[in-house]
Length: 238
Image 1 (cartoon, one colour):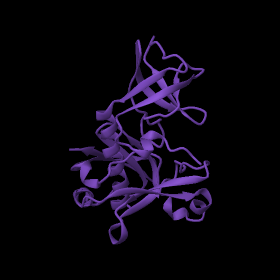
Image 2: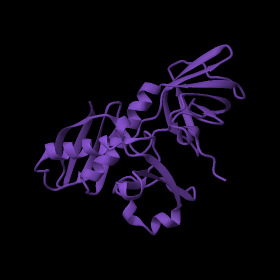
Image 3: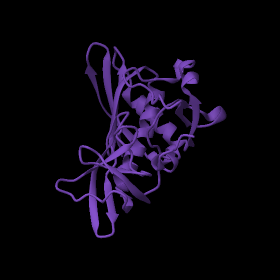
């Protein structure tokens, strides 16, 4: 059975206990159960704090190690000893901004139904690059359609399929440059809406809000030409 990371089983979890399994070769910390999201798929790694008896360590980034998350300490920080019991405290405000932006970008790929060639998530804004030779004729209409989807307050849920099932359904993959998180035998699908109200279903390994209404209003920023056919569309949380 595959263990589900804490951040995936409950993306709203802000604090959790853990035990230090190891110190990574580059000085990071590996835990037995991690609430911090490791950077990937355009979403930054989480930040926060580790607290243990007699010590505290700032987590300035979380990255992927060999099959696990590695918590990066701040400069000259003392590391919790291997075997120590620690309390993980997430920088929730930043994580929640990432969740809102990430879900908004999924909806952006609905109102602009073109192949996605890249993307990036930040605290309060994000962008997708599309295989879009010509600029949209009516950006205000796109923005209105995106906000209308958000306002429907659709449920955001997940399903799981096998790697083989995903390979047999290539239409689920919208990204051209980022491969879905495969290799563990199963792939997580993020669904927005359900039944007749479903608007999106695609592979994703990131964190999302529970309902689209939690995103709040958004605005579309610049639509920039990036190469012969690519255009970058930026959105901002209001």
